[in-house]
Length: 273
Length: 310
Image 1 (cartoon, each protein chain N blue to C red):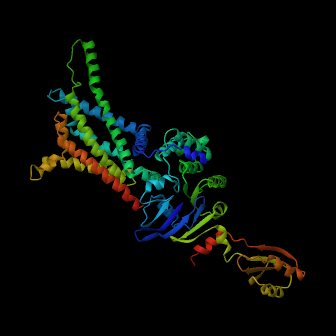
Image 2 (cartoon, rainbow over the protein chains, first blue to last red; image 1 turned 60 degrees about the horizontal axis):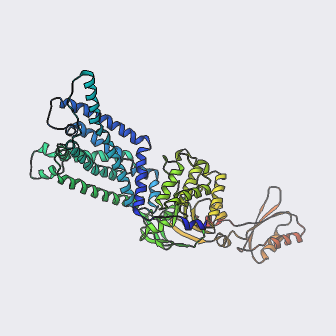
Image 3 (cartoon, rainbow over the protein chains, first blue to last red; image 1 turned 180 degrees about the vertical axis):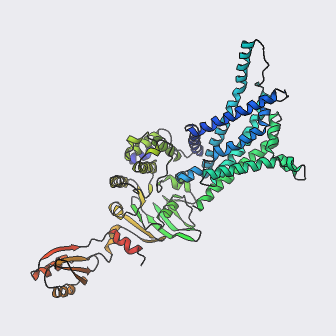
């Protein structure tokens, strides 16, 4: 026994701890049905949107398919509900089960816990958008089939054009970074997953409508602020291929701020327990 | 190993722990005793650094729980009350996660898990999902978790809560075996258990530490210690007079049994044994004795005396 004390290999690297939490949380999405249900639902919804978009695209426009996919009310309707689903469990479930106590009494800092959970949720969120990359391939298969069956060579509707894909994925990644952080913050505020989900949905809808305030109220002196933070406008400009650095700064700073706040909340809630 | 200095915790207007100071030496098994809601769990949670104390602090293995919480936690294994575990993991996966969280790495992870699984008798449940485990096995997983990394100090909050007598015995044996290499703090309200395994007792009531000593010292000074009861047949008054004249005996209470014997309840100085003399006095009159018994004070008596509300 006392000899084994000497040979226990230990690390005090905070990165190793972060990676441990990250791996466990990511596994929590992928090794249980939970994550796959979300992935399946998201894919189905993306499919519906694509179907609607293809209808629009028969009246040919100059924009790529991703522009039409994202600049679309259907998209926002689904998009807003993804985040509460992904993040509602993160902190709330730990607290309800009481496992947060074990986590916070291990040699782990609150920052490591919050970041580990954040990066895992964010990774899972990014995974949700990977299946869309298969659309051009699917469309190509469709084209090949059409050519074989009918002998006509159709023009590619959905193509792997870099300009079509980089912008949309960039804005999905950027706004997602903030919204996932927002969801984790909501989850840290309560021990009930349902309350966390409702709170997150409310905040997201508020943020969404703040971005559209100028559409409702017209231009007014403070309107630039609302333009600046309008996620719909960001999505529109990015998915049409205009990559602007202002939203990059906005979303990254909002993400860092929200995560810092979350860390404070987790620490604060220990006092009240 | 552990020194608590004026630990104080309030929740709103309610004071859970008042100015608790105590120290625990290396290798001691300390039992926290107290009625429900006395502040046992709160004190333990403060020691683990989970609940920040309102005032005061504690040091674990020389590390302050507020100034260097990570170092303090590295020297400690904690098993919370009701053993919260991740239900969707298997026992092995759970221990693996916990071992890595505690900073164990490389080959040691596997060695450590193997070691604690063996110590806690978890071998048959190694690959079982935690939510299908019985209460007893959950408790063992919690204990195994606390043991990972071979910490100097184990803090166990009600380790035998909700177990059946056989399981309680197993856990008790385990804790006793652990005491060779670890300092153990455990809380319980099963007094018998403390008597059997602890070599120091801290009694808490209404947030205050009422006593901190060895069980022997605590029981030795009790009012109940030294009390003797006797049943005999014969004349009452002369015997009582003779007994009360004898030095350590302070007072004799009498009552009649249903079948016409006398029952004497003899109150004497704590720590004395007046059986021999009393028996001799009664025998000198030729009266038969059918029962003589010296009350052995238990922690229960200590507990009742210290936490009684009347």
